[in-house]
Amino acid sequence: MILALILLICAFDSVLAQRTYCQLPDPIFNDGVKNSTWGDTDPSDWNYLNSNDWKSKVVTCGASFQSPINIITTAATKESTFPAINYILKSSTKNYFEAQRDYTKELEGEYDFITAYDLSNSQYKYYARQFHIHTPSEHQVDGKNFDLEVHFVHQAVEDGEQSCNDIRNKLTVFGLLFQQSNTASDYEVFKPWFDDTVNRVTSFDMNDFFQKMTDKTYYHYTGSLTTIPCSQTVNWYVFTSPLPISKSQFKQFQDFLDNDDFFPNKANNRPVQNLNGRTLYKGTASFNGVTSLPVIEASWSSIIQMALLLLVQLMITI
Image (tube, rainbow, N blue to C red; front, side):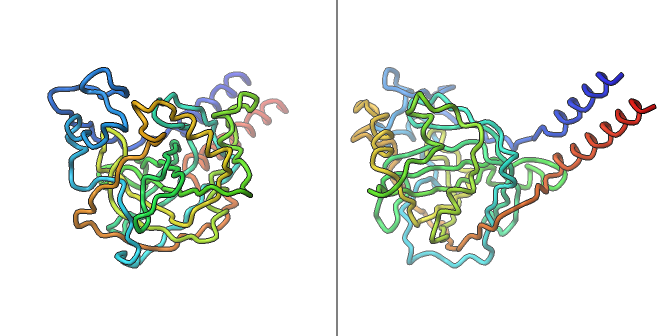
């Protein structure tokens, strides 16, 4: 009986912890191509040497609202509502695992949610799914590239509070810029990519990066993925005050891009795209510490677990 109740607790926890992520639109490929792969052995393959030809491989890459862009700071409009970017409760972090990508370094996993505004000033909930790197930066700031850009990719969910049908931009991506520094220390979270003596990332507080920023200024616009299939479903927040990165760790990223046939000048950044009349907004985000976990499924899970555990205790005493 006790074993059955324990299994019931685990089952409740598993069901309640499941998230229904808003699906991304299927990419539309030219000439009936069903999948576009990395490399250069087939006409459908893509790489950074042929980045200007991606639209001939996937038609969405030739659409009007593409990313990255050159952020002209003087052309931005002040945003009326600023996001409060707080990843909820460090101890709730799930394991992050390295994804096998030939064109970047990427960690995938699940982190708790943030809320972000789209350009219609509607607020939605997104969960962090992965982060990856580009060097040099994909976004420019007043025509300048930085040494590195990390993209934190968040995907919207459907739950009792929001419907996927109401969310135009199924992804929110934070772009963080990095510049080499002689005094910077290596970031622990990047070490598993290059150091065999370091275990995989099992606990990573994504707040750490944002709390290191001395300037919380961001630029906000609607755009696309910066790799194929270039889906125009991204709510972009680019933070323009660069964080420091050590020269040795930056070199490790560049050395990963060691094939000149795929990465001209050891670079994996897509060229900037035309803004095409989109409005660029400017704001200042807040990063206040969060000490609780206001997540519906986690709260109900805790209640049910406590109730069942009390029931087990009562049965034992009886």
